[in-house]
Amino acid sequence: MALTVAVSVSLGAICLRYTRKLHFSIPALGMGAIGSMSTGIICAATGGFQWPETMQDTALLTSMAACSALTQIVIVLSLKYTTAGFTSLIRTSEVVFGFILEMSILRTMPDQLLSS
Image (cartoon, rainbow, N blue to C red; front, side, top):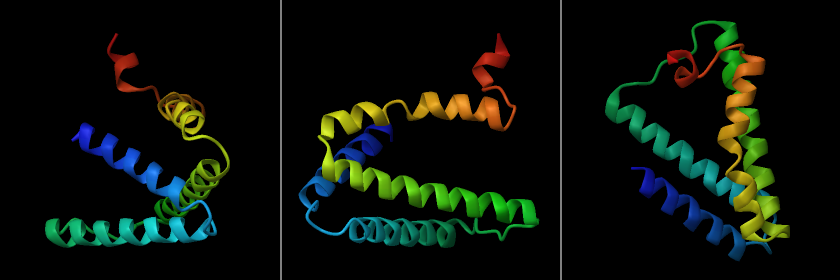
């Protein structure tokens, strides 16, 4: 599964590099539509869709959607104006930033740190 994700992300980056003459919103809109369709199919197949129950859940989902949209726009723009190698190098730090933000914002520790 991880190999499939890595290949898909690589192919997506290559496709973005070839479409850099387009307005940045076109690839972001296309990826958002494909993501929405695949999520809808998975939810329908598994029966796993559930509406948010509290306003806090709704606020968290809305902020997650805004962050995801901003991330997608920035990735498209960075692949449009910089080299793919530099962008890939920066994207590898996503996991580190995820741990740091999880510990600072949510005040939780990742599981591996807790087990020792």
